[in-house]
Image (tube, rainbow, N blue to C red):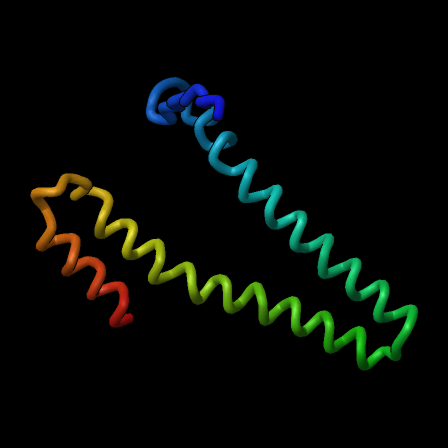
Length: 104
């Protein structure tokens, strides 16, 4: 197997605008793909089914986004609790961050 070269990108150096764009583009792209997928579902269901079916597909897309948002809250909170303590010496704080995230 060929070993891939690892490239390190430091987003704390350089302009803030460039760092924000580099962080936001994958998120925007993912949201666009999800929206296009839901829109394609609605178009196909609209051709095959009735107006009620299109409404159901649209509502299902909304609830998918809502569930994703609810799941992200404790995930980001746990990452925030973990981030300052990446070393192996901070195992106790890591466990408390994990238990705090899991209990929410």
